[in-house]
Length: 72
Image (cartoon, rainbow, N blue to C red; front, side, top):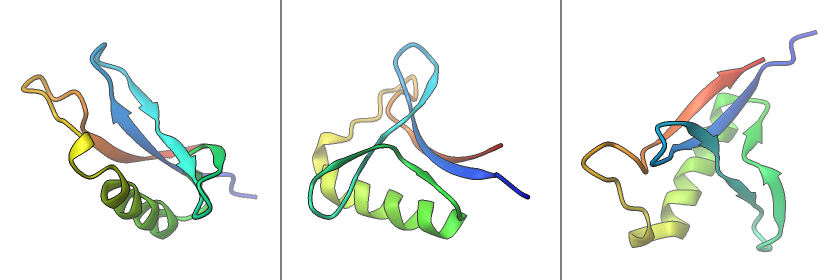
C-alpha cells in the first residue's frame, strides 16, 4: 500500500519548510495541508493563494515561498 502524501509547505524565515494550514471551504481548520494526490494539493495551493491574496509576502531571502512536497 502506497502511503505517499502531498504536502503544501511554506518556507519560513528560519530556512525550514513547514506545512501550511488546511482550511476547508467552511473556514474550519483541518490540520496540515496534506493530500492523497498531487492534483488535490495543487488545487488547494491555488485556493490558498486566492484566499491569502496580498498577505503572502516573499522576502528577498526567499522566505514565504510555497511548494508542494511529496512525502511518505
